[in-house]
Amino acid sequence: MNHHHTSPRYTPVAMALHWVLALAIIGAFGMGVYLSDLPFSPAKLKLINWHKWAGVTILLLSVARLLWRWTHRPPALPEAIRRAMPGWQMAAFHGTHHLMYLLFFVVPLAGWAYSSAKGFPIVWFGVLPLPDLVGKDEALAHTLKEVHEIAAFALMGLVALHVAAALKHQFVDRDGLIDRMRPGR
Image (cartoon, rainbow, N blue to C red; front, side, top):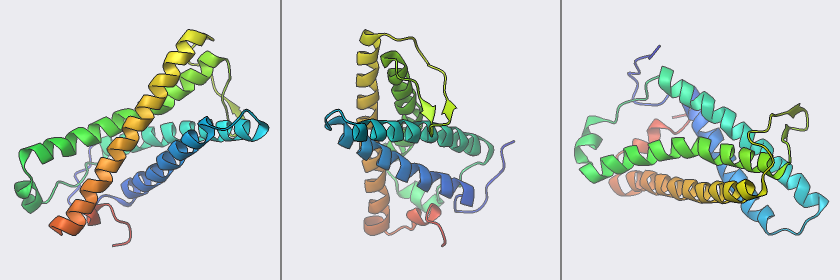
């Protein structure tokens, strides 16, 4: 079911998923960077669990966001903006969005698999035990940790590029493109 979306703005559900995911991803990334340099302690273990819970939540929200996008067509770029964008910008626009969506899944799944390979199960919010994605394997854990970290930094780079492009549209082009995703307008 692909609803045709004639409004120039995203739906309230799409906006909510965008902003909640944005805050959760930035928060989980910041927490991951912070806790990586902490000495082993009960406080570090608590933060690791919070980081894992955030990752699983981000994964579930990403599934919801992808399903919403598949069933609710996003608004088309306004014709004037589409005409004004050089081809490379349009390719960057689409490429950045596709890569971000891919990394919304790669980052938490690699983290979950890393935790599994280290032999540390994830109990979501301390209540729901999640299955291990792989068996315990130190060599695999090392590789998965690197994949998780590289993918997380790549995602943050794309987020920075996405924010920079939105700010360019708002303050340089002054084309109102950002209003499509801004709540309450």
